[in-house]
Image 1 (cartoon, protein in one colour):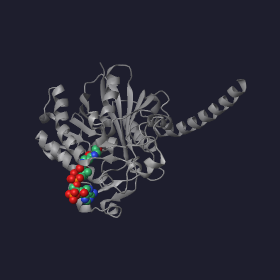
Image 2 (cartoon, rainbow, N blue to C red):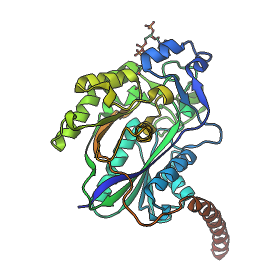
Image 3 (cartoon, rainbow, N blue to C red):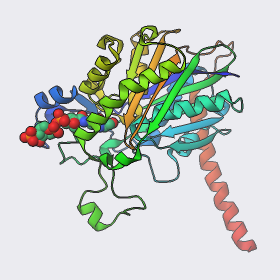
Length: 367
Ligand code: UT7
């Protein structure tokens, strides 16, 4: 059975930064309150030209460069987002087209903020089955467009960004070692976007009532998160007979500093084993685990052979944890250039649209 290694990683955050002081001009709050209750100081907000797909593409291209893999070698793209480009088509397909992953299947996976860990697990399982070799997992969020900037309960929390990992098959042991995934739909209404889906299609009234924005019972989500995070980590470790003593780094979903602190206490682990960057990005939902991981790699905190645990929770309710033995790019003699594929992809997409148009014109004539 092949092993599934994380061999590439990339992140992208839009440039504009929104500080707590900026938010205090929109709603009745303060920098002090936000920092004390959440640990957040600032977050990045997408500009008008940033979309989940374009941000996901930036992260994906960077991840492919690290993995030394060209887009045409990808077998599968899984995109996970709580703020997808459309209800359908899948954001994964838009990313597939923009990077020119001509061989890849592509689909979106919806598990709110837990999505990235779920998607990594699905990608790893597909590799372990032996049916595919190269998977791209992308978490990308433009939550600012689903945020009610008049609701101080939610608008202080979220930020925009994207992160991507490349998973590859190898005979060498390591990579994804274990994972647990959980859900409890009885808590669906604790964190949701009530309108815009089939249950409550968008109407003038739903827009007037702000039902297409994120709604959250903050206290309920807080209680749930502190209940499940530590437990999920322990479960994933127990699957492979490891304990927290074997772990170098925990990368938790970056929702609130106090939630991470409570998970550390539950696990009786020092907080300095937790990667924390919620102060500078806020909660970027499905992008938070990859962004935090990548920053830890850049700071030389996460190193090859380290045992790293990803743990996340979110709407659904969903939660998951995964244990990984960190590796990095697979050894290779070739050195690939990824960037040209992107420009080729643009041209290819354009030509395919024209051909589809011409084909449509002639087939209409035939009918
Ligand atoms: O990916 C998962 C996403 N969601 C989460 O992880 C959210 C988890 N929940 C939380 O992080 C916290 O519940 C919040 C940060 C959302 C809220 O913090 P809290 O400590 O649970 O505050 P609270 O809701 O209990 O509110 C305490 C007080 C209230 O005033 P009163 O009733 O005591 O007078 C609120 O009205 O603070 C007030 N408040 C605020 N004050 C200033 C609530 N939001 C704000 C605010 N600024 N932004």
